[in-house]
Each structure stands twice: as structure tokens, then as C-alpha cells.
Length: 361
Image (cartoon, rainbow, N blue to C red; front, side):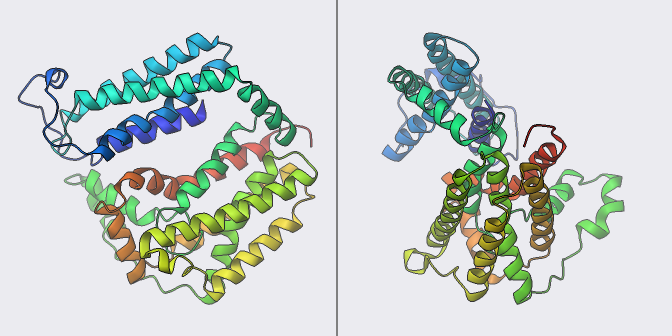
């Protein structure tokens, strides 16, 4: 269910972005249901609207199945969830001048959610879900859903341009901008203006700070993996997988931003040394109990957030960020941006809960 809710939130973001300039339409909000086939359309839009709802349908089906519902009800829940969410999004798009509601999009979204539910039903019928559950019980502790969700979302956050490789969590500048816009004309803005209007005079990170940022950026998800993994060789496999995924996601992000020819440009001497240092620290923690691993993860995340908050946006990073925000990667923008900003804070909260837990080691 956590993944289904998160995926639904991403659909809401992608469907309503940008959120500004809300207005009451001069026509009925139901009008889009009777519109003819749109004059301008692309095959990519059709496929995206269909495929984009397939994971939602599959996740809702699995959540319903885990809640004890029979497969038929799970498939129906997938259809209804997709239909309700899509209809709500199309209705709300009437109030956004930069968005256009479409009955074709609605039909494709419902078809995609239904296909996801049917696909989940077929996989369940073939025993795939039961085998996954058995595999999960062998590899991960009970109640590991939150940690697994964080591990699955981590590479998505790495796709959004970061000022330092693996340096997620640079949300402070955007928080300042958002608060300034939200408090416009308010007396509170006057009191906060010294902080909101201040231009951060960030100095470039030193070589040691950059190295530590990369090391902590790798160590944090590795500690999440150790918290949810069962003891033994499985921990080693998960750590190796996390390191490979982190390197691959960073390489893909660099290729998206600067072109395939520069995909490995992130591998500077400092970044490579930081990656190796983070990997060594994670390897040393393999034998630690889960609560100790969670404590180390909290320290790593706190250090990461502190370092990234003071990392300057160099010209290459700023140019890369502008490309994303102007629509070059608009289909990844909403998901990767928010995950990249919020992942460290969600991981901090999760590890705090694990430190306080009284489960058996």
C-alpha cells in the first residue's frame, strides 16, 4: 500500500503540474467528457497515458490481495482506483489554464489501470506473487515495507540533477522560494525576509567535504538495506546491489543531462574516493545489529543533509537543473525532483522509528 499511495501521489503531481494560476472555467467541468477526438495528439502521449497507470493498477491489486481480498475484487479495485483518480485529475485540469482535460486521456488511464490489475491477476495465478512473498520473507525482516520502498525510490531520486554525486536533499533554496511565494503580502513575510531574501554566499565544497558527501550519500541507503535485511550473506549481496544501483543511476543521470558521451563525467577523483570510502564503511557495518545500523544511518543522513545544504550550484549544475525545469525531461521531473529532495528526510524518519523499535535482533 505505501508504494501504491506514493505512485498515486506522483500521478497527481504530474497531472496538475504546474500548479499556479487556478481559475474557474467558463464552461461546465463535465464538458470534456463529450469532446471529439483531439486535433493534436502524438503516439507518445497515448502510450504514456496508457502505460503510466499500469503500475498503479498492479500495486492496488497487490495491496488488495495482501488485505485478504479475492483476486476478482483486487482487479475491480484496480479499475475503480484508476478511474476515480484519473477522473478527478481531468476534472481539476479544467481549473488550470496550462492543462487540457481529455476524455481520451481518461479512457486510456482507466484502460491502463485495468491492464495493471489484470496483469497482477495473471502473475498471481501463475504463483508469482506467492513466490515473491516467500522470497521476501527469506531476505527481509517482517515489517520491511517502508525500508524497501525507500530503497526502490533511491535510484529514482538520483536521476534528478544533484550538486554532488549521490548528494540528495538540497531542498533549502526551494523551501525559501516556496515560502516567499506563499507568504507574499503577509506580515509574516516581513519578519522572515532577511532569511528568505538572503542570497546564500556558499563557498565551493572542499575536496574533503565533497568526498564525505559522496561517502555519506552511499552509506545512508546501505544502512537502510542492513536494517531491513536478514543476517548473513544476504546483507553482502544487498550492499553490493545498492552500490551498483547507485553508480548506474548516477551514470544515467549524467548521461541524461550532458549526453551519453559524458555519462562517466561524475567519476572525478573526489567522487571515486568518496564512493570507495562509503563502500568500505558499509562493508564494516555488515555484522552490526539492525538497531546499530539504523543509528549509523541517522548519523550519515544528518551529515549528508548538512553538507548538501551548503553545496553551491555550480554553472553546470544550474544549466542541468534549468533543462529539467523547462521540460527537457518533463516526464521524469515531478517524480525525480521530489524524491531527490525528500528522500533523506523520509529515510531519517524511518530509521528513527527503527531505532526506537523493540524487535528482536
